[in-house]
Length: 121
Image (cartoon, rainbow, N blue to C red; front, side, top):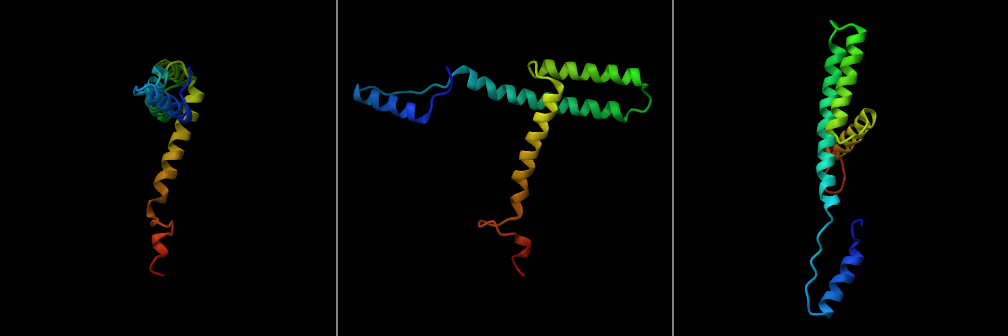
């Protein structure tokens, strides 16, 4: 069963109050484990990205060794992330980084969203 909506939780609380009891919502285990899965995905994606950049920057490897090392790195990352494909991992990582960059870009704005660099002009 999925996560309960806030409306469902409120209905259950009112129902419990009518019976003289207190309702305690406990989230399902899957929702708790999902956060750990996302953390594992990010770590595996970071490790994969680092390994791929090291492989590409190594000029001493011939093409066969390079392909083998890439496959090995992708397999390890897939296993660490819980079976997610390497291309999906990299896309997920890029999406996460893009959202982090967007969150930090607005730091030079004041409370109203005005750019601080133009504040004194």
